[in-house]
Amino acid sequence: MLGVLFDLDGTLIDSTDVHLYSFLDALDALGIPRKPGVAERFRREVGKRFLDIVRDIYPELSEEQIKAIRQKKWEFTPRYLDRIRVLPHVYDTLNALHGKYPLALVTSASRRFVQWVFGATNPSLGMYFDAVVSAEDVTRGKPDPEPFLLAAKKLGVNDAVVVGDTDYDRVAAIRAGFSFVHARSIAELSKMLADLSK
Image 1 (cartoon, helix red, strand yellow):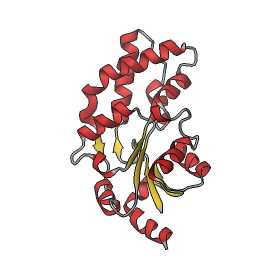
Image 2 (spheres, rainbow, N blue to C red):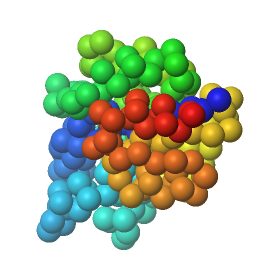
Image 3 (cartoon, rainbow, N blue to C red):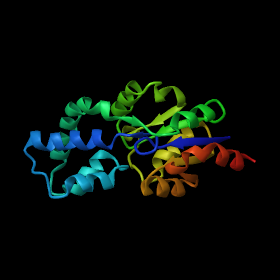
Image 4 (cartoon, helix red, strand yellow):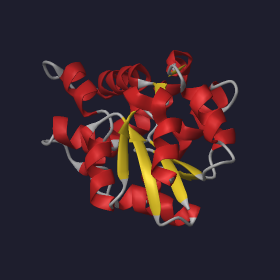
């Protein structure tokens, strides 16, 4: 059976501002200077695990400092949850696929954030997924194939179509041996799946 694996940020929802503003608030609260262009750099790297993004932007910081940023970020995140937006065609697509294919959510975000998203969306995106893989479930994040391979294992499928919006998603899908569909084509996903299933 064919499974369908969805990325979260940039594919199903737009939550970049949630992550960015809570990150910037965390830097300010901890007295860590904002580097020039930090917001643009952060936006470019969305799709990777948060800790990996911080390591890339602030390689001089210790692991303790980086984890302190993450902890402080969580304190500020709830104030920005109203900025989460479900992207066009998402509900139509999920309604068309739900019950026909096993569906998994595969995200570089934390399990806590996924639960917040499920609570902030109406209807809840959580009702559509048979499995969820979040940052805590893997040792290597995208573009490593581990998250998608784990999702396929959880669904009990050997083949899958990955729907994502970044090169991290695409490369991870290819490395896992799965097909990839860009999120901008999400409205055409049902037809693509029908063709693949023939």
